[in-house]
Image (cartoon, rainbow, N blue to C red; front, side, top):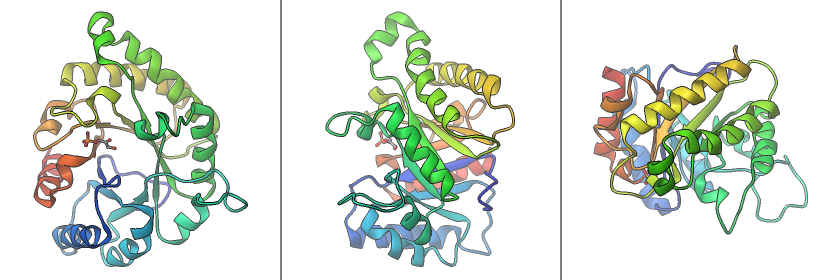
Length: 259
Ligand SMILES: O=C(CO)COP(=O)(O)O
């Protein structure tokens, strides 16, 4: 995938901190077997392992360049006195092409990352020739039931606008719409809710960034079957627990590929 071009459809998996090193290796090895040449897929498939496994994951993915390696976060500076932080320059050097930023698990305590902090990281990722995957989403479900999608739009709009203002020109950006209340749940958010919110967010983006290559994915307890209900309005899925089983991940990728 050239760094300036995003596939129309994307399916990615966030391993979070669920996997240890040997299970990361087994998981990625199994995925490479599914999608290695001569198999060809047009869906962009990406995997976000933990930092310590990125270099070995990059080696494992060497023969399957259609599978995109990504990181789960980064610092906004390329180098300096930032003990324990991870440089976006190094992520690029070990083979990452995507960096996830502003995940709900980073926006909340104890990390409390703000839109401003996330915007500086977005700039750093773009500066290093990688693609930011920015998570957005409203916090509360109970209020949604009484307020409809208006609350979700009000919470997501500044999250999107701060990113769009941080980058100039036709830069590829992936947004993952992940309602916070749907992460770690048994079921994803309802298709009606997701499609309505994402349509409004697309309208917002198009008024500001007409030429940008932007994709909007859904995340939050997504699993096999979820795509069928969302495919008319979304560009793909950002998966968690339910794709930590290789068979489930393959099923979701095939569902997206065949739609
Ligand atoms: O947070 C997510 C992806 O980043 C989704 O996680 P779950 O699918 O486990 O809810």
